[in-house]
Amino acid sequence: MKNRRGSQHSLPTTQRLTIIAQDPSVRLNGRILTTEIEIPAEEILAGPCGYRVHVVDYDSTSNVLYQPASYQLLDSGSYKDPFKRSRPAKTAAQHNDALVGDPRFHSQNAYAIAMRILARFEFALGRRTPWGSQGHQLYVAPHAFADANAFYSKQDRGLFFGYFAGDNGKPVYACLSHDVVAHETTHALLDGLRGRFMEPSSPDQAAFHEGFADVVALLSVFSLKDLVEKLIDGSTGAARLIDQKFLEPEALKESVLFGLADQMGAELSNIRGKALRRSVELAPGRNYAAMPEFQEPHRRGELLVAAIMNAFLTIWLKRLDRVGFIEARKRDRSLVIDEGAAVAEHLLTMTIRALDYCPPTDLAFSDYLSALLTIDREVVPDDSRFNYREVLVKSFGAYGIVPDKDADKDGTWRRCDLDLVYSRTHFDSMLRDKEEVFRFLWENRKELDIVREGYVEVENVRPSFRVGPDGFILRETVAEYVQIMTLQVGELKEALDIDPPKDMPHWRRVQIFGGGALIFNEYGQLKYQIRNRIEDAKGQSARLKYLWESGYFDRDPDSRSHFAALHLARAMD
Image 1: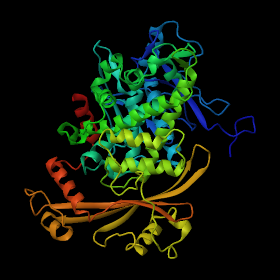
Image 2 (image 1 turned 30 degrees about the vertical axis):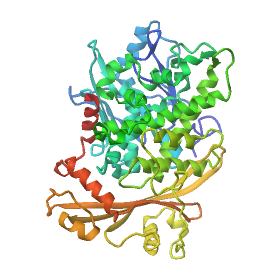
Image 3 (image 1 turned 60 degrees about the vertical axis):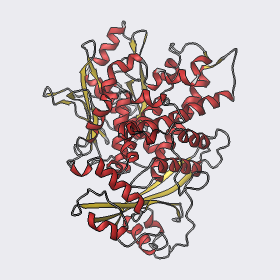
Image 4 (image 1 turned 135 degrees about the horizontal axis):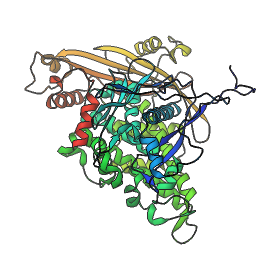
């Protein structure tokens, strides 16, 4: 292995780069707030271009290819951050212009945030995480077009960020918003982990991509401790104590940390819409899921955000109550920040890990809640100290989301206790080989209740190493299989007892999906089979009804503009 120059030490594993902490409109003393973040160390070519993220700064509207950012390799093995100042700029205007006015910084900002989110996924899952698009590298275009939009495109293998004129006539760049870049990066990663979640199936699955991406963007902000320290009460963070009035749930919901400050929303509302403000302001205790307006994907996703972010606030404040006040109604600032970061980190890890415990098709919010509870129980069996799982069940329930009907009484998935055949498969191969997992399915199809009808394919086999809070490692292998049947509408009733919409042409060909996630322990024994049955007549009938009424069968099958259209609808709402 190559060592650091002039020493016996290995190369550094992380690299620090400067980004805009939240958004150019979030400032202290007139200066845009910046921070340094740690990302995986790698060889960085001009762009920046690394092994997973490749910035190509081409503006299709003006037909301009901007000069790429370049990086100097230091003797330490790290790259020099060209935007880290040894001395602060003399004036706020100089400081701000050096960031907003330099396209090379825009490229670095987008690259660094995308790499940070990627690293966060890989830490949570305990393995390398693929993009949803083909290839190993994801292209990022910081100034892709002149429009108030930003989106991930699977076909074009990239993230595309727009720019537009703000209210004061100055340009506003989507690539300079932490939330926007984190949101789009999450779409690309979620698509790589669960590719069929982009396919319409139900209001919940249509909404999950947007809601989940918002959750990742919001929770990842709270691990930037220097940002939270400065913005939690609107001060510079210099005071050692913080007044309790800034730590009330409603005060926190209105803070810049949730991306809800008026100064921020004014310019980026064209991209972000009002979804974040609405989600944290949704009052609990109402059956939102049954309301007509919450059948739209960009509205329904707000329920997921509301449930998780309100759970975050509840646990954070509960942890603070355990340590009390330093003096009258004032708490230690550093302790407040540390506790918030700890809760955000744990919840973010849970939300990402839960993806492995979701069925690969036809996702419902109830499935995701059971997945959240189960993976946390696997890694943290004793939750009595902070009661994350209890709070999550209550918070989700307040928005009409309950664990799956097939879950155990505590909301977690039931463990597999079937008498299965392992002697005809090879332990080592089954932890990484799709063919070996298919052999396992074939030998156990009766016990696993996998019907012969339809095409069965093992799509992924992924070993995972998850580290718990106490340092122990949970080794698992996650495999996903799908079942697919293609039938004419007129055949559905006889074949699977499915009731198609009455006005659906009998000659139309439709695909019916089923499938499951198989969770194997470190010894190759099946722990969980988390699935949706292809022969579930009620569920399949509801799916076809949703697809027919939403006009799915009349759409262009090319989903290149799927997220662009969804984000446009979100912004206009």
